[in-house]
Length: 191
Image (cartoon, rainbow, N blue to C red; front, side, top):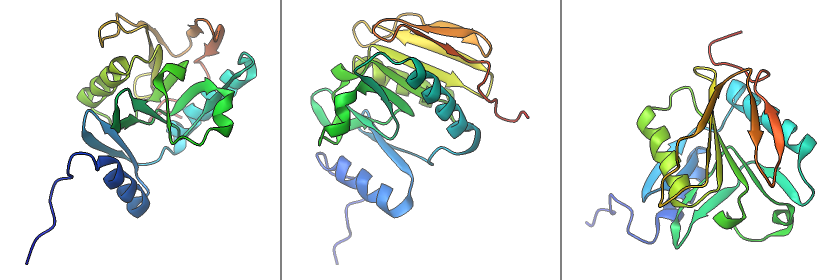
């Protein structure tokens, strides 16, 4: 009797990720060749995404739109992708048949840190975005009420971010040219 392979074969990680999503309902990403699974956002995590999306959409320049559940491809690796909590793309994405967004089309990726995320997971994901050359990454951390805005990666690394606390406004550069209020964002484990 032959046992099935215990590790995915190179070239079929995406197929494995899709099977896991269908079977479990978990969100699956492939970051640097590793399968990363997380539950779908709910509660304060989902509330943070909703509030950020509402603010972005209220002031979004024409031709851009905010999307949830949209994955971004790693350049030159069809088996490597990331699914930010929110991503700003050209509104032509509405009519695109591609499954993965081109990273050069991404104007902003937003990650809301989960309650259980570890520092190494956060650092790894930020590194993925830098390696994919995502111009602007906003990381919101409801665990501690802080945010960090990373921009313009150089050689696969973001320079030092602009950081702030909940209550500070986030100024997003061109082409967005808008300000985000963080005072309305919920904290984990707070009323």
